[in-house]
Length: 154
Image (cartoon, rainbow, N blue to C red; front, side, top):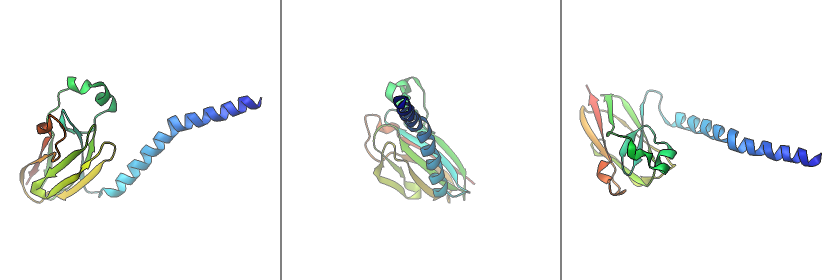
């Protein structure tokens, strides 16, 4: 009888770790990010990938592990905002350490965007035009794909 009780307790602990804990961590992460980002900001998620460049949104881990990204077509992201908007870019990496540069707004990340460690950059879109952002750390043989565009409308 005591072995069954112990087995049940161990089983419950495993279920907690496998199912409940990830949801708690995810909720905590969302809470922390909501405190870092101003309410009025336009938020864009960008994920760096060595072969596909900057991708709007995120890339699933299964895509990276199985190389199924090769089958998908990605185009460099185009972000559209209005002059005067506060823009927040949440940057992540799906594979290797990337950098980030948006020189027209004085934004440079030289110490790297590491996989699993998102970083944010924030700026006021105070000038109209079309601006290019890029990876500023040599990250692989397709480094030239690490481009994107921000269009600031009047």
